[in-house]
Length: 369
Image (tube, rainbow, N blue to C red):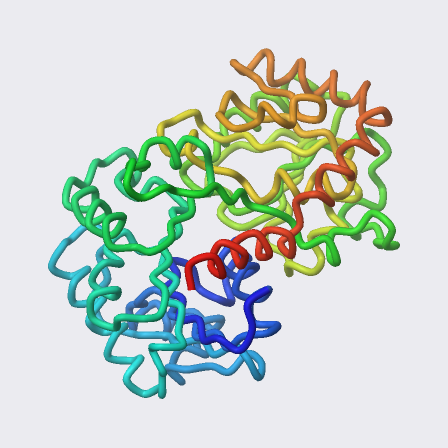
């Protein structure tokens, strides 16, 4: 692991929101380095009307001795408008002026496809670009200027990582290799050897419990979850996470739990027999590598997924479904194989910890600096 460096991370996710790969990797690197985590620009109205975001009014929040979170606020935020994006990037740079940053000892780590602007302005000791999503596609809309700007970022980065093979292959250039870094799991929190209490919502459930964990965003196939619950009245299904759409008719055997604190999530997964990743199959989702895959496996659960890419190496513990009927059939196959799969799933998860991911990234950084 690199030590006594400073990492300035321009991240697309809020620090206190749902835990993402950005949060986990920066936590690992903060053990021996100072991290300044720059959140995406937030509009003032959403901060005022959401109590959970009031911390942003301080503009900077100290998380620990080695982590500071910078929270830029503005009046208007629009990811799809090029001019507003430029203004918001300027605002992020303005907030950094309040920190003493010795750039010759700093790794500038960015998830922004327009990162070349930061790289050019600051001249850090190392420019690292991490491709965590297909940024040129948002809700099915192609944003051509994002593709152009990402091309410039790829040309100017010293080191680039991608979270999936698909992203790695599609962005690869002969003169600048892209390295693979999948998502992983917090093995100290998701540990099969810990004694997790049964969540109160599950105490009276005697039938097998099939669960979806995570935020219900537009790429989650809610209709598939409902349809599958209807097809399997002898099973109980649950969705643990925020965002379930209002007005959807919910079958009696489908429990909508809502958001729970991150440190409570292992108890919910531990109570399940099978974990689900019911993503819609799109160009966007076929470039993803869900964290929940590794968290399910860490607690010994077989996983049923829709027909996405990147699961070949998990074929003995993951059931890939090409349609809704096969999705339902695979749940029953996973139930039948759950005991056999358990030890293999745990073994795979332990090989994919955030600590090991950070070590691989650190080794590549050391090769360059």
